[in-house]
Length: 400
Length: 189
Image 1 (tube, one colour):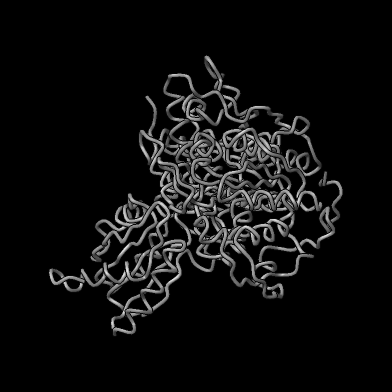
Image 2: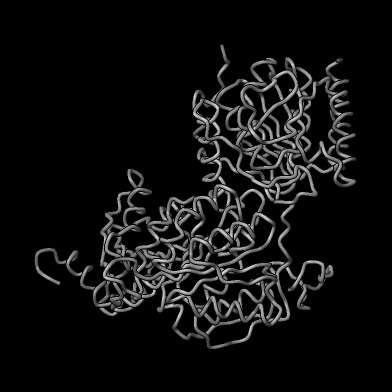
């Protein structure tokens, strides 16, 4: 087992040189590779001085979990084991993180839902662990196909949620995620989402720094709650106080506690802006009256639609949301200046992103928000589907 | 009857949802304004020296001598209380006190208002309290009392305090004590 005590001030337990996140993400020279999302996640974890990882197989994240296990075998990850099921995994992740370990896990679809109770417990106990969510369908009849409906269940758990579009973003985000989650005034879990298969199993060009550098280790003694440490006061074995008694004290503490968790997510904004170079990323025509608001691979397909619309002489732009929690309301409002109609293409049937966008913009913006197109259950989203939505709006009553 | 604070009965909206977040490195927060550290230190000293029943609430990180910095800070906090003519009431544990807290001698993050009401405290410094518990307490104090709250934090600070000083290590505490002596002299106290 790799141990903290094997480190020096400049090297981690596997002999990698310790560097800051700024150096890793912005300064270190990079070379080109050709990798899937699962493979690139292994490369990210390799560079993060990860203390612990817990896994359980479920498509499409099984390969990523397996590859993190290989890192343990190679001496890069401190502890690695398989949980009893996803509920067990997320509980064990909580235990590792409360004990002061930098901890990562991965899951997908039904695994996420099986573990659901833990996510609100994670944020409530202020652990800075990272979940890589490789989204897939959750409905019956059972599907293993890509679909991001499961993200809607995560929105109010009190966790940060970032959404990567492609393999490169998955690499960079999963490194930055640890650093932002571990900031003392943030210190809530982070869920880095990618669309299953479309990113996890798709091989793309990706620029990586050398693997002889890694992030400085997590310091649990800068946490906003004491880590579980029976030798350092105040010694604690259970961090949640017993505030379940039915009296006014209980209500006030609970209300304040829950608002504190949500405040912590909002405090991540300046850090996320720095490491992600903005909470939103805008491409296309700056003066367009048509926009697409999207996250993940839906934003990639929206960029295809933008290119097709350009050929028709129609200006449009794509506003990609890199963070979902915190929701980038101010940045979205800025990006929508001058936009008359914004479409929200999504890989789910319920339109959770459309609802989130409308909730954030209500009364603050004149842009008409059109939900769609939506595909689900593993269906791809061809640019033609997005173009059809736009054309039906532009040529109302005349067909696409 | 309790003296309610600016956020009234309920512990929300919190400062973050009013657009206030922790100050950047090297700066401090006075109500809604980001200011220089020294400006905030002078105001904090003035408030503590001129408020009724000013009190320091030291938390576990300075109450237990688990490293040299904690021991040094503890001595400086004692000196600070003498300079500010302030009482000290410890927050030595984070578990709520049932059936009833002894508000004369302790404060608890889950119901800090009880201690502030009982002792009629109009200004208080939170120091050495783990950030999460400080934030939970400060939100409750802000809504339930008219106490002017000051956070002296070793990390990033606390936007729900009326004044927040961040990265307050022993060197910064020494600086504050020096400034507090000057303010005390200016006020002829």
